[in-house]
Length: 490
Image 1 (cartoon, rainbow, N blue to C red):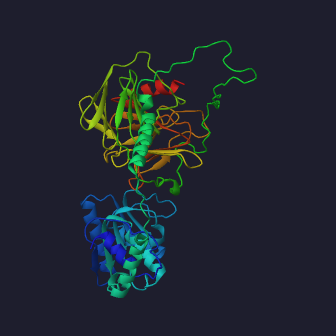
Image 2: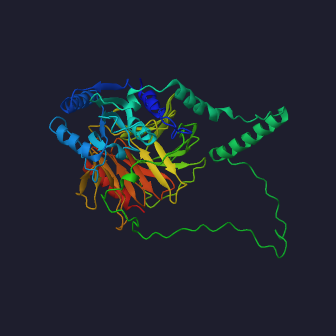
């Protein structure tokens, strides 16, 4: 039985008027249920299962216990057999590795593999509150789920749901689908009007990409407006003066609250690219989600900007670097991607996913954005939030630059603010052992998260657009020299 089916069977034991939550789809291998003779054998089998999952390449593994006391005992017994991540619930970051935790702390978390440790009838009676609790535990698993017990398995797993209750729950599932609304039938004229409206909207969306329409102005004859009618003027654009200080309260390398780590939920994002417009200075890649602008600054620097909507109304930002000599660059369109080449860097944008892939001049991949969701920009909160998701490799070493040139902080398996709250405005910089840097052109809080469970991503607050510089250099000194030029330009 797959994970999603297994979890749904647990849910069917409940006496709910409706399901408490919509069943979550979890595909993977069949759920493993193993009976042991005693506690010692359960612990040995747990350690063996963890090692087996690690050999298969699973990065995040959780052993879920009923309470903190049991989690503490299991952690103590396993520590000599497998390497455990920090299981101190006050300090744990829930990154990659193996963690042992009580079921109450699992809501909202996800793991490659989950082992339910000793879910007995005493720990999980056949009552509604325990149905929900065990369901949450089972649905934490993305790919693998195992159950280890001692012959006293809870009836929520061991006992099949009665046919009567199964039919009742089936009726509950079907009920919401019974209500239907009458579908309006449009006449041919109404359909034609709708098509005209949609065509006009599409024309407006594309208007900035093509030549401006020719407008014939009336010939001026004396007074343009009647006496007493005020002359129409353009609204004044209010610009908030910059203080040169990062007003964010988040100091460099401070630890964010755990609640900040999970990106904001969203409906399905279509990041695909529909068309492109190339100018002498940049190329715009336009899709239903927004406009992605790629600007070759010089041979080793490319600026990437993204804004939601169909118009390229980008803000220059605090750091608006331009080279004295414009770089020589080229762009071409392939069947599956758009590609620009500028000096040492080749940048490809996948048409289907919108994800960017950065290569060196030999064609070796340096880094790529996540194909499933490259970027996310939310503007409906009290302040704008952005997430840029990167597919950093396991071998890649990332460091965040501190205030001084020599100050570097390792970023493996961490979530840290890399902006300089309360200090002089400095551009946050992330350096990679792959020979590139990412300069984040954000004036507020910037966080980098390399914990696989939540990201990996770069997050900003208060920005209406995603804006960063990709800096290519063989060594850190080259990257830092280029970074200094960029961050000095205001």
